[in-house]
Length: 272
Length: 360
Image (cartoon, rainbow over all chains, first blue to last red; front, side):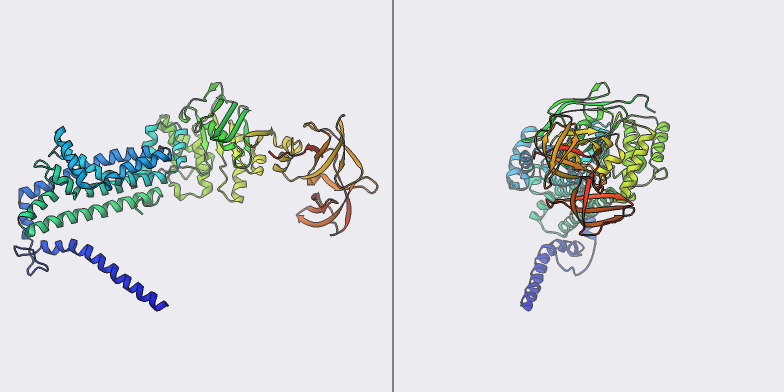
């Protein structure tokens, strides 16, 4: 009996490990590929070199796309955090029936196929003159970023003791002051968490970007995609490594800020 | 020092949540500087009334008046009411000092004055040295006192406390009860205190309003409520009581004649505040008003079931003919033998007849 269970759990561990490996290995493979000396992708590299990094950062079009990505991601983060936080606060005050409807609406971009969103946004942005602009792309990305902000901030809001708000009101504070001095400090962990997700989501988004970016707002993932269709050089691996590295750094930073804030405020980590 | 104190009046205040009635139209006057306690079990409406006073809840009907100002339609921030919450509700990201200073900063009090008022308030609750501490560095009792200081420093017209000692252990609770009463004596301010703990109510209050099912059953000083309860509910809510079923034969004159269930013989007592009718009623005799009957005087026969020594007090549990247990409590009395038959009598000056308790 116990032997069978043990065998099963070992098998489970092997399968789990393999799944993880299949998921992670290709991602990590870009790192050695980017330091390859040869002119083609080869893993493991026969000789190491950082000459492709030189080429990446020496090429104005790559650097411009990286800058575009950063600009769009920052804008998308600002948009989605502003709108998402207001939405989360509003949703928290709705009666329960309306609340689930509103949450469903906010989360729907995660369910609706991205290609459909892209096509409709393509027409809309063309009509109103936002096509190929960083602002237009950032607004489009905000659709995908919003759910993360609303969910993260919503979790923080749920943990906020309603008596704290009442205490502040009772002491004479108006709505804006209550938000600034009580609500905001309490939702900082959720805000940072949501902002990190929003930034990363926008930074490596590719489907919407291909449709909306045009020439004016060509982001790194779009440039990478175009490049790979023409030739598959180690510069592509460098670009992928840059995206991977930035994403990871942001997550680690965001996580540290969130945990520190959570410890200071005495609430739990909103990411858990 | 605030020069004028304000009374508070609730006029025909009512509130229901859907089909549940939390407050029946209720009238209540609180004198300037009075410490009034709302005492009752959960669901009796006491917290609803407190939240209406603070402005966190809108009444369905009626008026709330503080001083001469009708505040019914005003939001909490316009009422100048101090509130102490059961869970303290201290701002976790602010220091002790900033927590207490919060209401003063809202009022744009100048820095020097703010500093001295916060320091005074913290000294008053004996936390003078704790200003720089973070909230999570304080014990429950200390947090409770910070909450008190935060509510008092704004010189509220009305101070509200919602079971503020509920989360403290028994020892600490007794200490803080006396502390709150001391603060009130030093500087009386109109206070409404909500609790379900009768001892708290008796120790601290000028007057107690006992609530049940959204109405005030009786209001009075602790002594009045203890000595002259209007019904059996009040009697059993405040202090220990023996309630003996009796049959009222004659309630027409000032003296009410009655028989005790399970015993022969007729008794009489002066009529109480509540009108009695012929029929079933209850005789209230507090344990300390019961004593052994004299040799040849009338009394009720009872069997000694248990004796408990509480220091100088001896509590004796007695079984009546009907099987009902009653307690007798006496100072410095020799204990009775277990199983012995004795005759007991109530103090006619202290015993009261109460109407039969109808289930609400």
